[in-house]
Image 1 (spheres, rainbow, N blue to C red):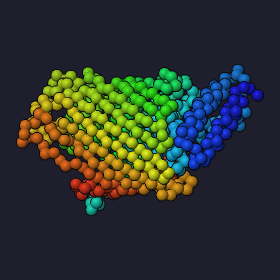
Image 2 (image 1 turned 180 degrees about the vertical axis):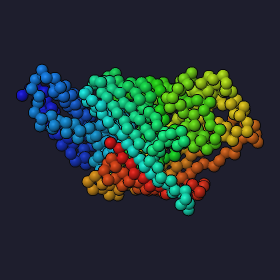
Image 3 (image 1 turned 120 degrees about the vertical axis):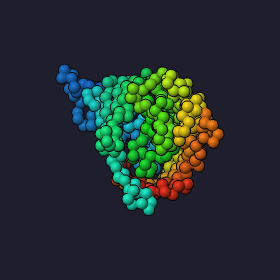
Image 4 (image 1 turned 90 degrees about the vertical axis):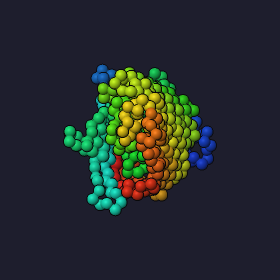
Length: 474
């Protein structure tokens, strides 16, 4: 028997024994659990390296005799079983509480979104596929004729691992089923990038990628958030899914600290819509460039910091600043810019899952642009902001099935004040949008969910609606 046939089996025994050793969580302190999980994570890293070597030798005819299939299968199964538990301490706690692992926005999913995991797991001999889909229907209260159903999103992703340190990932999205000049569908690359591990703690990426802002922007599969639709704050204030062309760095430490920083393209003020409904829906979303011939005279910078060192806890925030005028001589504010900041926190314990997020954006040097656009119903606002609080409780689970009711309160405003607009000509500042969303997610499998919720708009009952949907990811 070759050396490489023994090592996976040996590492399997070590990993299984170690996992068994962290058995009843009640008899261990949090620090002991964290230490054991870190050791298990290191064991898994070694196991993966040995398994990759086995696969490499199997593809070479002149290599030694391949290891017994049972040993390789055992190592593969153990690696797959240990991956979610070893990703981070809070991931193991979420599993111990029987939360649907793919749904929980715990430390593991925030560190490694699905496409990043696929890139990590892709074999050297082929492409790894992943994706998600969501279909939904909304019916306004008291208006049956206004009911709308759509295949909201269908996404196919693929990843390729060039070697142990370098990989690529891409994500192609189709919205609303049909794409043509006369339809409301859209097809786009949501991400397309190369990532390289500089060392065990630091990685870099270059290309079109999602910014690490808030909870939903990087991790937005329908099985991973509550409610049929994505929450308003992380779509209207943070323009999820927000991607840019650029270069980014990510650092991780065993203490649970994770940081991100990068230089990317920004927004284009020239794309500011004259349709007030677009800019009210999302000021930044109305100007996004999405990697399509993006003007890059003025680049943007971002930074994010997260802490996942305590089991079941995530605390973090991010800051973005970049130009929107893009030094264009044919607009009145070529040096205009925007700043967006957000903070977030999440606590998962037992059957509870509680989170909150607050975000605030501010435009700078847009007075001249607004002054030359007098009469426009939607000048560029000085500020836009919002926050939400959300709580979910797993009331039942059996095998792959589980039922998770939730409640969420949101408060936001996309236009607060207008500089450069003479008194009497400025639009009226609308009151804050305040929304209660109450619903439930029923999981047929951790990767398949049925959803229903009702939304009540406290300042405009005409917007109240009932939503139903189905989502999945693979």
